[in-house]
Image 1 (cartoon, rainbow, N blue to C red):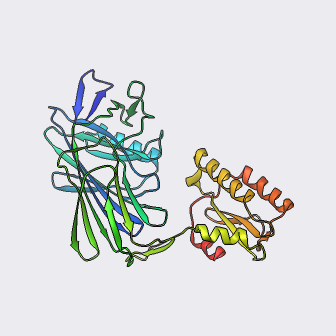
Image 2 (tube, rainbow, N blue to C red):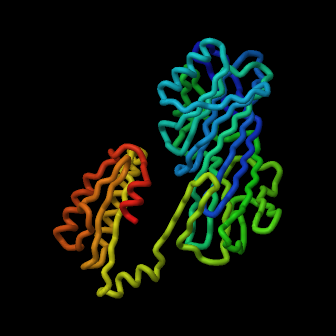
Image 3 (cartoon, rainbow, N blue to C red):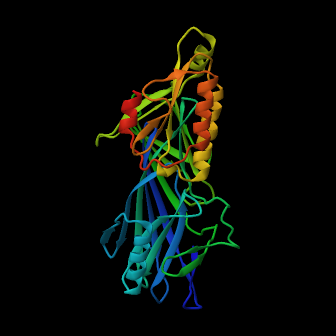
Length: 361
């Protein structure tokens, strides 16, 4: 529940979030997640509900739909300032309006504004997103649904501001519960050894061959910790590729310990290392680009002598440190690479993967 206080009115309004339903579909190392949230106004006047919730940082939201009085309102993607202005103007005209935006304080938290919700009315907000899943030690797929917000929000000092001028006090605890269901299917022929949850008791139903349905075993589950689902595979997989019906392709690979030992043990082999670094606008957060700098510096200083290497930065286009060819790893070339890494910025525009993939492969 969030407490909303209108700046033009001293009255306090309690805005209940009635329920949350989360449905996930897992295919290999990707998940399609739908979150359904029901708001209800039990006040005698129209209100604005403001709700803050977390989503995995690497997730990509592709759907935002509001339903009220059997009408579905599909969101339109706009620049942040334009969307906030349109939302405020709609409320000023007495219309219903719905806004979802990324929290400026934290990129893995989002804020939903449900504006001008009439008395005794319910509004259902449905959010859909896709996310890449973590592959742990090549044999365990880990699915995480964040349900709690990190304590970087201090309820005594910070609130959530609405573009319409409403302020809300952030409340960490919640009186509502959560429903969760997850389907695990199409793991590319990989056999599942075990499915478990280190966070909650779960029930697992083998609906059909190679398809599992996972639910929370307890009916009244509160949002006091994240939901973690671990899918252990019978065999180790270091290289995976997934294709979806729409034509989307996702691939992942990770050098094994044996691969690394072969590189360092057999000095007569000619090894080539190409570092591909995302320098698009999505890396503008200084913590992201700084972590990338630190990681590449570590890798650079760990390269075996006499190998060949190159560094390619990409965004809307790409730029290689050494044009056209990889060069031998020696003191002079390592110094050039270190200079580039230390001055590297997230200034290459959008994230275009096709051209850089063609360049490297």
